[in-house]
Length: 114
Figure 1 (tube, rainbow, N blue to C red):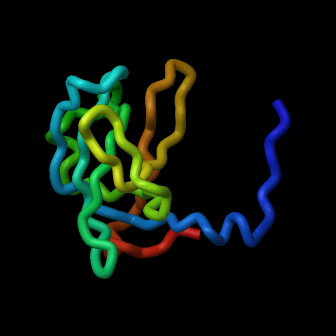
Figure 2: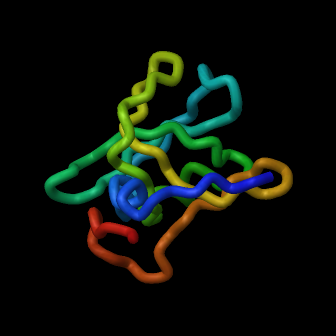
């Protein structure tokens, strides 16, 4: 499979930030097992919502307080009755299980990844 190439100016448009998961709820309406997340990206971004198919590897209680990386400048996406404000990033395993991209050290919410 050939990997499409982005120009540097295209990549610079993608805004990835570190945020802390504040709340995790089940998402039974989703087609694939998923959680509803509320993530704090600090000022000026604030708290954004996302849906994440991470139920295979993560329990809800273990996600609270975890810092993750997400793209925060995609258009909102409706998933069932849920509106997702950002895209949580993770590595996709062979069984389509997602491993979240996280920080080794606690950092300020909203720090840009690049």
